Length: 153
Image 1 (cartoon, rainbow, N blue to C red):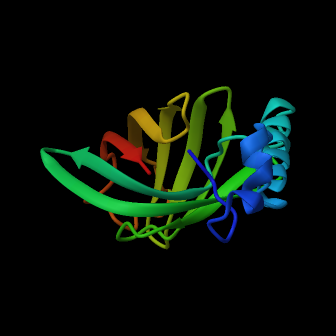
Image 2: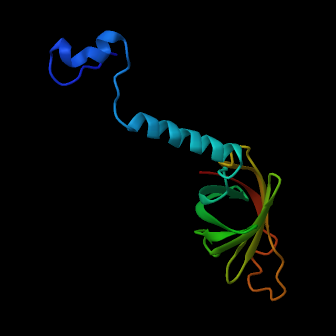
Image 3: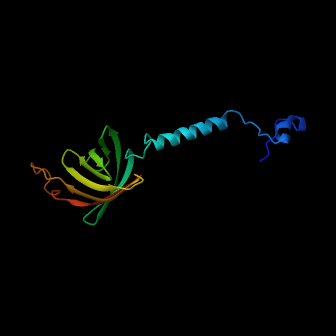
C-alpha cells in the first residue's frame, strides 16, 4: 500500500521516498494498546464467556415441541432471570463445572432443569426437565410432566 501525503509533489513525500514509514497519527498505536489490553484481560480470566444473556430454548414433551426464551443474569455465584414459558416467569440456578441446574418457577408450577453447557457457553445440550411435585395438587393434569430441551444464543 502506498500512502501519499497531501499534494502530489515528491518533496511532500520525502519519508516515503527514504523508505521510512508514514505516520497515520495516534490511531494505530491506540488500536494496538486496546488489542493488548483485551488479550491481557482474557489471559488473566477477567473477561470470560458466561451464561449471561438471552437463550432460545426448544423443549419437547410427549411429542410436542415448545419454543421460548429465557434471560439469564448473574449476581455473585447465583444465576437467575426470567422466562417467557407459559406458566413460568422466573429462573433460579447454579453452574458448576459445565453442569447448569436451574428451576423455572411460576405461580402454579416449578420445572427442574439440568443440562450440559458447551465449552463455548453458547449452547445448552442434553437437557432434561421434570415438573417438581407439589403438595397442593394445584394442577394435577401437569403433575409428573417431563421432557428434554436444548438451547442456544
